[in-house]
Image (cartoon, rainbow, N blue to C red; front, top):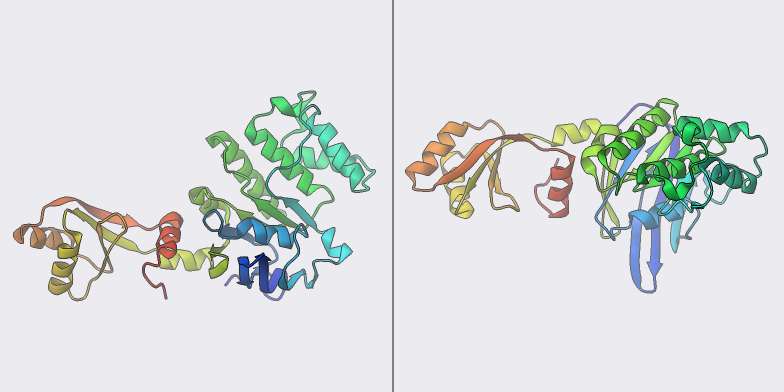
Length: 309
């Protein structure tokens, strides 16, 4: 694990559970997020990401379990002031400007010094939005304004739920750069997203949740170790091809992927594999070496594929 903030946890949960009637949206989740990390929270729709973030942000009460932020209960007023939250819609007033929206939120928080308003508008690149009303903003500008609202009070911890979903490439780039800047300032960021390719560019750590249960937490370095290179072939009869490969090359670890292709891990002689299959009258439509990325790793874990050790 990362050595940054070894003994300083920004977020720690124990047996965190949320029941809706008899159904568990979140079950026994144990999160450990160190100060200064950008923690990518990954899971399918309905896996429990938003429910977990709402409990961490004090917007929903756990059925059972414990939440500690910076070593103190989430209900502690002092620790709540160190927290910025953007979950689901940001609650923007469309007929007001960016500055008017931020000023209103600042007043509700008891912040009378408007320099804090200027600071969050500057860091999110909205200083020059001028008199343009929010209803005329692009989706990316609205998301940046939502982050600006979360940054009021200069929090040490940010909870961002799907901040880049629905954005065009330029909007995604803007949010990615903003998160990178906040990370450089030392803020701890918990971010969920379905756009795993982008998440892999900014996250230092990952947590994967499935059906309300945390199935894995790992660092960027650990993910890189597990995302091995593999040789993949596309054939009509993947099951027969797999049996032939395992019988001919006993030192090669092979499996059939969910797409029906065969993947081989470790030291693989691709030319020899192709030749053997052709000699056994199995047509090879395509073959080549690949590197598993975060998205492939996530999908593999969701399907209960290979066991990563």
